[in-house]
Length: 61
Ligand code: FES
Image (cartoon, rainbow, N blue to C red; front, top):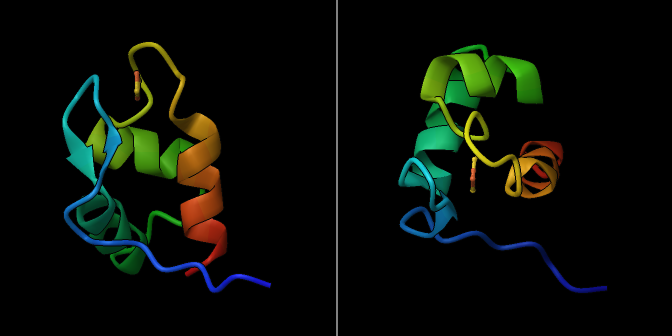
């Protein structure tokens, strides 16, 4: 199985220019669900195409 490594600078949500690092930080500060991440960072609130990736990312934290 591949180890899930995410570069902090990788853009997860191109619509709002949200990076993996921003999502990781939001998670650390208590946004433990996709809904919470959306609220805190704005990621996933436009087209929604990145929602699966956000889910995957927070599952890996
Ligand atoms: S890529 Fe995140 S809302 Fe469009």
